[in-house]
Length: 240
Image (cartoon, rainbow, N blue to C red; front, side, top):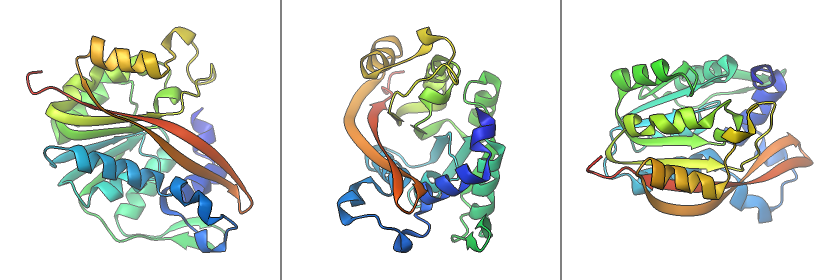
């Protein structure tokens, strides 16, 4: 699993997804505009619904597009990814340094000192606890297209009450494209109904929003993957 996300081709694809590199050179029609800026739209949804804007956690941050967008609204942003290559790209971009994404093309964005990026595992309870100690608890947590790439997403979900401060919000976005390659035990797979039940009945969160979040992953200028991620936004009750 991780080797796929560390490849140069995947880094290029995710740089395109997160930052729209080379959009002016593509053949993408205007009718698809609703599916661009997926990471930024996720960060903006959380900013719109967060009651306080202190600490933001981006779980499975990839190359950092959502984290960098969140820095416009939150005081402190932590992103981590299981792919070391993705985390390295995000860290380099946040430092204002260029990243080589093609043989003849680089990407650079303005430096963002409020963003910090780590290599980490969303199912490692000790690592999550360290994130809380160093940067949290969090006012907003994003897990975008993450759950169906975890060996057991329930381990991460069960840690959310600790990760979030009372009144904080979490956005879980997933196409529910579970595969045994990533999640071997089918008993750990989730769909919309079971995820809602887990979050509200088992963990005591309040559902705030249910929305489709389309996105595009570029294979090349004339071929894209069109994915409709399901966005569920929950709030931790003030009493928990």
